[in-house]
Image (cartoon, rainbow, N blue to C red; front, side):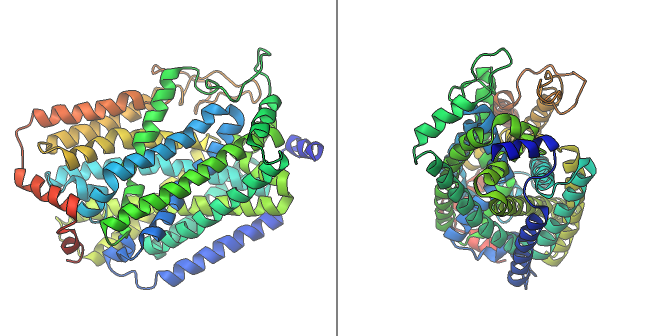
Length: 548
């Protein structure tokens, strides 16, 4: 098996049978399209288009949140990171999971009660509408853009691996196709269609990963410790000949501060991710909002335990050098493991699931960003809040088209980057720009418009600046195996910020700026804060606002 395997990898062709893979893909896409068309008859009103008519139960929404959250990054990126870097890769899983507790305890229910459709509804509730909405829309777009890049890059690499697409043009074509299918989901299906796609995909993904996990464990006598030991023994040596210990920290993050910075971004970022926040509006009551988070935590936690086994399984059964050499690089660990276990059929199914994952997440992101453009920018700023729901939805659909095009072009540029890492950047921006403002506006009486603007823009600009001048973009030494630098840009070095993830600096900065901005400004609206407090705790008044 492994001999045939390394020949395949050496020839650099595809894995499995392209015709079969395409057939499985086509089935996935057709089924989901049929469902989208069926459930989305009657997406007339804005509430239906953005919030699925608020008709989903807590359990359904929890499954959909899991679907939204378990993106290509969690499935492909984390499995790959664990296969290559062991312990440090597993940190992504832990960070992504603990983050949900922050979302549950601080944000979920309160947001559901205050808001209508977008994050900006909450932030501008007790502040000056216009400037705050513009700021919130800009940061929503920034986070969604980085997140979209990650998903599109994953789609290109994954499909190239499966269909044996040679060269960059093939991968680019794949990204265009993904973009077009996703646009149909969003423009035709709205939130309702997208939520159903999320639910189906979450179930498939967790089942698929569960089957693979049991299969891997069965190969090692159902003993996790044997698996970890053998994977560790099989790990390739360091360049200097010393053993590479997958079970110890420090393989990916030599610098403990880098490590803390990443964890901060992951743990605090979730509660500020606009497309996750928007999910809380698709349920009828705050009790259902809480229930949906509990469902999501169980499903997501289970899935991340699976990634541990999948990652170490890939390290042992596929091998780190094969993974690095495959098209799609690190992100191909899970599909290669599926091929090593169950041959072409399992590979096709798992890849079909991964593909559905990417489609669903990209659709969720696009809806969020287009809702923000039409609801926050167009209605409030262009139309002064007088746009009819029909006009708003029409603008949202046009916005989705534009965003789809941007995502396709960006995805072409981001090919070959580790997805988990691109997502961590999106999280850093969300944690620096959105979270301080959300928490302050929910919990701090004095908070005002200047505080919000300083916090959003300060967090956003500092996070992006530090990313641009970090080793991620330029200046990492070339990898001896592939001859390429792990940085985004080859052959140049303009980095001056030492850490991969800006979280440790930009997140506190967002909080500090929000505080200073608030304290130096005189504005203070006690009545509005009281109304928001009552509303966020009880939901009183939110029902009226939704059915106006």
